[in-house]
Amino acid sequence: QVQLVESGGGLVQAGESLRLSCEVSGIILRISTMGWYRQAPGKQRELVAAFTSDGNTNYADSVKGRFTTSKDNAKNTMYLQMNSLKPADTAVYYCHTKRVVRVGVEYDVWGQGTQVTVSS
Image (cartoon, rainbow, N blue to C red):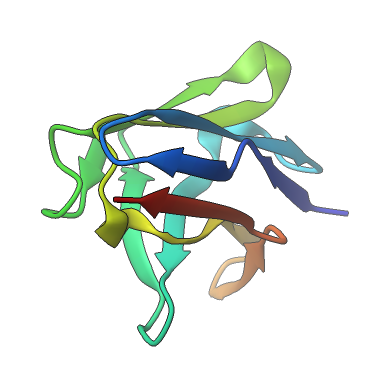
């Protein structure tokens, strides 16, 4: 019932930009816990950007000043604008939400991921 579909990844050179999209269904985007994660080769999955409960955003130190996440509630889409990309940003990027079933019970929902490759 809840589905997240990422798109917009690709291969770019260092310094260029990409905009990732996460189309959501089965949830109300405006009030859902949403975030972006990435997993680079040989590394653990890490949180890179997220919406807080009050609608603000926070970012991993490694992407602050370069990445911006936003939502278009009318289009049921979350975005990750990635500027000044570095080779270290190379990873599979995942859209994530927490589906609350009932009080005290929630489940992680992940998109299929989209590959971002940054060459030097």
